[in-house]
Image (cartoon, rainbow, N blue to C red):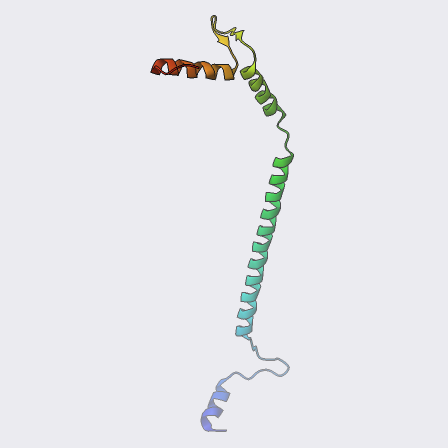
Length: 120
């Protein structure tokens, strides 16, 4: 052994008998840490996508199965009111409710008369 090597070896603390020196493989520790972090991130993103897909499916299922009884009955009442025969309006005297199709024809005739076009 050269003199320099002997001095360096003497400067290092000598391990006690039966006790191993700490040989930490920091490269392996960092690699395992990074791989573990990537696996956790991938798991979280995968579960987020899975839950989002399930939630969208549930919303679609609920919308398709929903019963809109109140809205449908209100729409049916409005359709009947628009297509019903002429009747007086109880809120405004002298005003009559007529079917919408007849009202459209009257408006067209009135506009034609105002413009001087022949009314049919």
